Image (cartoon, rainbow, N blue to C red; front, side, top):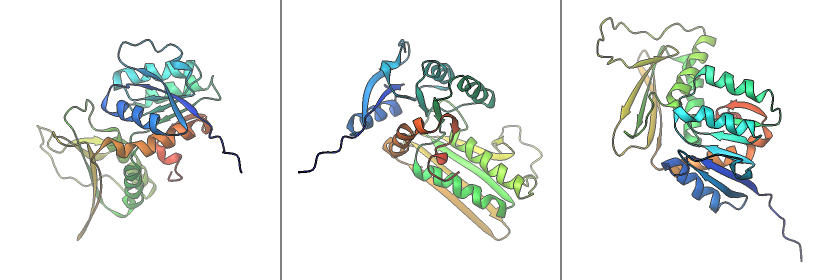
Length: 254
């Protein structure tokens, strides 16, 4: 009789464990055979040594995430971050701190849904072929930041593809918009944020050229749609020292 193969277990703590995403992450970790949940932390809790976890999953709020991540890095923990709202200065600070912790990996992902990552990849590929592009993101009204991290990331990827293709600004003859009806501009790309009860997380990218429109859309109807990506991050972050922005870098889609 062959011996059973022992599966290595990754110990994980969750910051923001009582939130919608955090509680779903906790249930997923508890159900997986190769992870063990060793700590749950929320607002006001002393993070301490984070339960001795190998990996910390951070799903708090934008105002707390940077300090939480810094605490994790200082204690040598790998971190998988789903909290959005990261500025370039904040990302630079994480990279600087990681320089003193060469074995620590940090993944900051604007979205963990595999379909959303594919949507961003497809939009980036298509961007060089279309003169016009706009992004519409739709979320529940309890979301505290706008535009969403996914929309901001998508806009940046599209803008980079347009620059590489030698395209100019997105055409727009609007000269009067005192109410901001044309939305925000992220790296020059128009982004519109909708907040409606009943939604979870949705985004569409509309690309236009003379005589045609290409629409790329992704919908998450339940937070369980993010869990395969979160688990991929937990399982791989230790193999990627330093700062990684975007789960696509773990999936071969970068």
